[in-house]
Each structure stands twice: as structure tokens, then as C-alpha cells.
Image 1 (cartoon, rainbow, N blue to C red):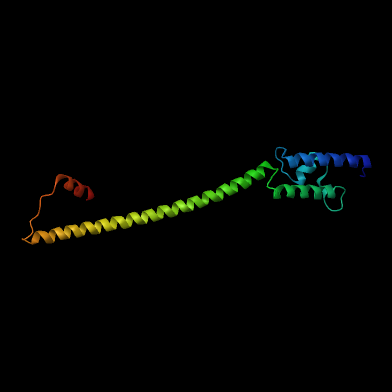
Image 2 (image 1 turned 90 degrees about the horizontal axis):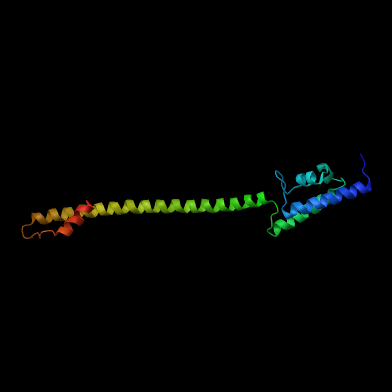
Length: 155
């Protein structure tokens, strides 16, 4: 079905108005900043934007303006901006989690090594005490109460 020049001009005006709304971020519920939503907002068949159809030049203009906004860092589709923000946040959180896990592994290793060293030192102290008690020339001093508490808490 052919349309008159007046109808075509009216459709182009509706398309340009819908294009401006979408690029300002006025995205309808369930829509995106894309040709499908542009066609539905302008009440024009979507196929009219492709190939040698009458509104292909408007599709090119829409995509050019959309790409210019994206390059400038302005994303008109709030959902797309949210997706981008959440992906960035997710990547940062994954990095923090990996760092936390590495820190936990390092501290666990340190704790294990420290406990092993303390146990070895304790065994050495007990061995030296035992060796010292066998020699009759060494007089053992009585342990103070605070020292006994410290030694008892290390066991």
C-alpha cells in the first residue's frame, strides 16, 4: 500500500519525535533504546527501517546518534546503564573476593607454621629442662606464680 507524501512526512515527524524521546532516556516499559522500540513508539512497521525502505535513513541517523551518546559515556537506556554498572561492580567484587581468599590462605599457612614452631620450641624447652634436671650441678630455681601461669596457658 502506497502512502502519500503528507503521510510519509507525518510518519517521519513521529519517528523523529520518538527518536528524541528514546535518546533522552524516556524508554517505555518493556522497551529498549533500539529500532524495534522506535518503530513501536512511532507506530510504524519496523521493516520500513531496513534496506531500501522509506525510513532506512532515519535508522542510520538513530544509530549514529545512539553511538555518539555511548561514546560520550551517556547511555540513554537506564537498564543498559544498570547492566554496565553491575558488571563493573561484579568484576570488582570478584577481585576483592579473590584477594580475601588469598589473604585467608596466607594467614592460615602462617598460623599453621607458627603453631608448629611453638610446638617445636616447647618440645625443646622440655628437653632442655629434662637434660638440666639430670645434671646435679644445676640448681633449679622455683618458678614464680606469673611464670607458671604463662607456661600453663601455653600448654
